[in-house]
Length: 128
Image 1 (spheres, helix red, strand yellow):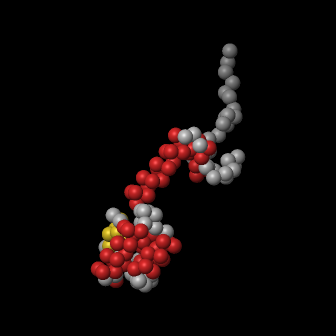
Image 2: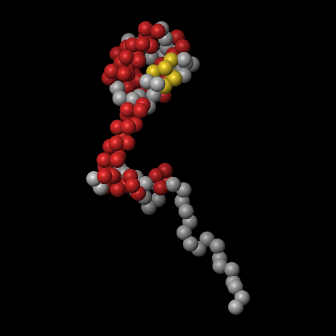
Image 3: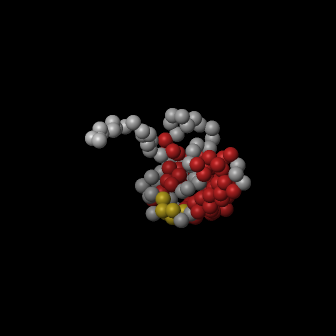
């Protein structure tokens, strides 16, 4: 099992897929990294030589922001938007979509489970 950027990548998968398990490395960056390291993308992680593994590790450490550093950067950006009361910051505070999506319907990922408002059960008649 290879360990890159503090993440144990699966050894049975092809390298270009396994690299996407690292936060901040998607399919395009995985291809770019493998091209720079001169590694065949379809080789399995378990078949990588120690030198190839080390080369991939160096490229990611030197050229890309990944894992904890990237998460900290994103969190700080959101915190800054909230502090200056930017529109996007207000949307983050309210837990609503920040990029102009509609909220009358949909937006359930951001808003959470729909809660019914009023009129769901008839009132029981009470004796006076």
